[in-house]
Image (cartoon, rainbow, N blue to C red; front, top):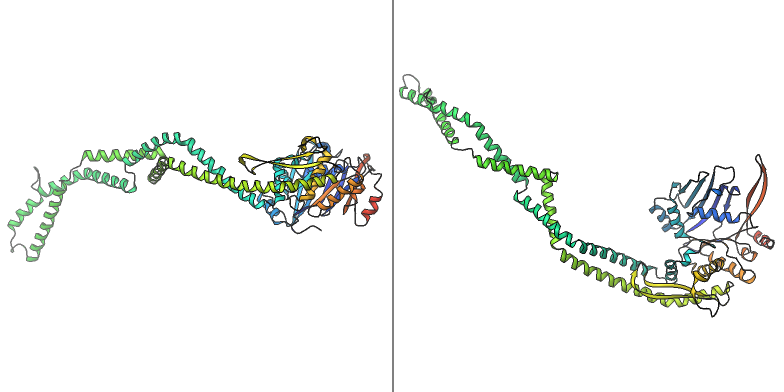
Length: 544
């Protein structure tokens, strides 16, 4: 049974028109699955199919002869909320707890990939597999050889995750602020030139007093002056009507003359009062008309107003905006001017922030390094014990740490995973001295120790039994079983000593069938579990 928190496992793999597989479905259990079969039966093709699911590039040679396409489809069961959220975040949400990956290979060489029934790139599959699945074989040990991965394994052993997250958050802030500081410094000279331009624009906008009120006031004055000019003729005509001219005596003098000849004998009192009231109104109107003639049309003021409005329109065309837009641009220029004039203050302030964040990051990196140093010795001793059990007698594993001067995403620890496979011959980097089989066993040793602490949910082992047998094979089988207690294990093996520890055997065999196109070779899969495993394993000796 898997422990609480087990997140992901492969439920089944469908192979259609894939090499020697016609149409087969392979089901896996949650723990230790062993794939066995005679050499050439097609068991390694199962691993090839799984590699396609994990984002490896396809070869059209894998398409079964006389077929137009091949399909490889894997179904995973996921019960982990964090893993489900991962698929949601990358835009491939799962349906309930099932994760489905499908690859279609065409004879033309083209391929299609689907994740949870949505088309995806190979990069998406690769990212997923690197995060949750480990494929271990002669050419698939690059994770173990990566210093990033080695430091990650050590941190899992140290239980450094929370401290590492805190460090990486601080380190990212430090890098962001440092980049911002460098940008400020690089732009300082450019900003000085820009300030001249901004000052010119501000002065021009201020010279014309850009505002809705100012522009409306100018327009109102323009309308008033135009009205004076347009009404001047009418006013003169009215004035002539009231006061008279060379051709006419005028209305008011005529009324005055009439008034001198009025008497109660001609008009009654009411009519006389109406006459005098009308004369008074006309006299008052005449005064106002004469007063309006005193308002002169100021040519200079009119030209000044027209010139000012013209400049405002030019500014609108220059900035391709309206009055409000000019106001906003003015405010923006003022803000930019303030920022530029305060750039020295900003640089000093930013430099202080960068220094503070760097000190915080260095302190956290030192805590990480000290904890890694403490546990590196313990992990080295445990790895040495494990690899010596796996037919690497006398071999010694060692994790060397060195403190770097510069910070990186992992702190300031440089890790070197070295080993001495032959006593007295000295320590060398694992990648320089270990064979494919030895690398597989070293990684198995790592898995045995860290199986309950790593994020990997599925382990695929190929050639884990290369060059071993007897007691060593038993130890390898026990180690694989231990890893399967916390992660799903799928291993290809030739050895009954290893297969005996599997909870499920997947046997692959070849057969020849008759078809319309003649005899065809097919690979067939049979699943064995429970008490039948032991019975089958006893007959495995010839399978090599």
